[in-house]
Length: 543
Image (spheres, rainbow, N blue to C red):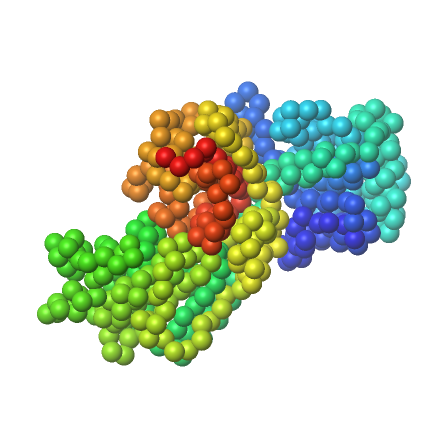
């Protein structure tokens, strides 16, 4: 059985002919094949962007790759150079020959591979057109050879037919004839997955993810309905399991019913982001320190500290009047001290509801928070990661041994890119080249990229760097302009996410991977939705 990317496609969203060809590939091709479905790509000619799509990219390590265009209907005809697809409803004019379209995809991916790895593609590369619903006995035109045509007669012996096409192109000397090395195989699969992951505007990855999110949303609604029967509850889940979104939906349901709600978290940026999403005057969104300052004013500054967090509960309890809430949602609860947990209770009406969302894998501050929420019921558990591609989440599990009870989603993407540096100039040059390529060659918007680090910028390898990849670095929490690259610390970015994360992990030689280090790494890497770079910058010794 072939390795499919994605593993399955819902028939309701796709043409019958493509579903038929997809299933034939999956069932008939051996497990050495990788088959990529609906890979979007674009090129720029004379400043004009041209968008296209490869229906199927079939990779066989014994040969190379084929780009296959699939056409449905009941027939095909050409008149005066114009192609028409015939179906039961009549005829539909095509923009161009499907053979030309397949060849354009073939040439794009060959060039794309060679630019990415800076080496010639070592195998066979070719293209074909498939008509799964009917037979093609003679060439439709001179530019549509039967040697590169797959029709109904081939659908039961698809692997044999694909090998014949590979051999045809090998004979045409379009590529080599040697077996692709394991390294070349890995590079090609990674390059194609990268193309999928970076097809931000219209790529199949994004489309499939949005469809999956619709299904997850239904699951979330079920959880929300269950929570209605529990006035107090813990909801536990690994990174990317939708905790924040469930909390947001609870807030919206509360105000829709005429109530007043409070959203609390550790991270100021997360509180601001949730406030923008909810956008309702009956919902207050604060991080704990901001809430304390809004209630206590100047007294907050003099609050005593314990284990790195200020204690506010005694001061809040002494206030003569408290505006209490029908609902309190605590997000990223693992960041709360016991005092903060107690303070959250002080703001809840006697008959109000309290929901605490947390992930012990992200407890980078090693805080104890549970008992002071006064929740006796066992937690609701969220099992499915819906934020990260499967590649990113599996990689994070392997590197940290955390989040092992969370199930990665089925959306495959590009493998994370790990690099280790001991020289600052090399690390900065790499970051510069990555951002330049992402923005200028891949069409990724700068605001989709976040440089994340375990240090503030002034104490990092980018302390003297103002521009990366031709774009200014933006490290303020205020909204950045569309042309800058955000720099954030892990502590300041908890609970948030970005399509592309470049994580700079400042470390020391032979530094042990403690529980705190693993939790930090887990938190950082799971911020990436589609593409992840990890840079270990190893310093000689502590400064």
